[in-house]
Length: 188
Ligand SMILES: [Zn+2]
Ligand SMILES: [Zn+2]
Image (cartoon, rainbow, N blue to C red; front, side, top):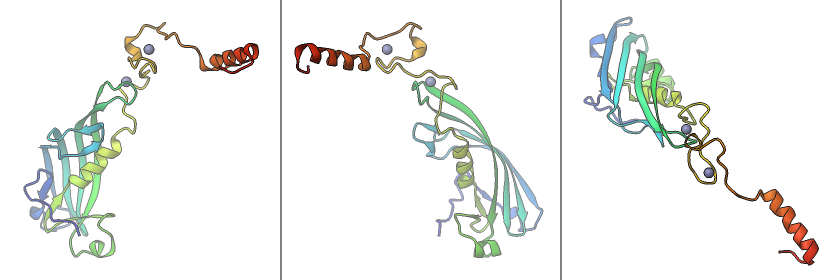
C-alpha cells in the first residue's frame, strides 16, 4: 500500500472533472518544478528545475490514461573528462492509472500498474521512470570525448597533440631488469 499523494504536490492532478466517464479527456499543459532525486548520481534534472508537461488525461473503463510528453534539462558531468554536461530531454509518457476497486486494481500489483488515489493522479512515478530511462548510462560531453591523460589528469582537449610523459614502458622495464640480472648475477 502506497501513501496517498499530496494534492498540493506539483505533479498530482485532480481528475474529478472526468467523472469516470470513458472517453472524457482533460488537457494538462504547464511547467512544474522538478521533484528531488530525478536522475542518477552525477546526472539528473536538478530539483526545482522546470519540467514542461503536455498531457492528456483520458478516462477509460479501468482508470485514467496519462498520455503526453515531458521536457526537461538534465545536468551532470562527462564520465570521461568530468566537464559539465547539459542535455535537453524530451520523453513520451503513456501510463494507465487504475481506479481503486476496478478489476485492474484487483488483479494487478501496484508496481505493475499505477493507481489513482480517489480522483488524484500522481504523475511523478511515470514522469520519473520515463526521464531516468532516457538518461545515458555514460553521460559524455560529446560522443568522441578523448577523456583525460592518465598520467597528469589534464583533459586531452587542453593538451597539445604531441603531449607525452617521459616514462619507461613497463614492458621494457621488465627486460631491463632481466638484462641486469644476467650481468650482475642477481635481480635488482
Ligand atoms: Zn568529456
Ligand atoms: Zn599528461
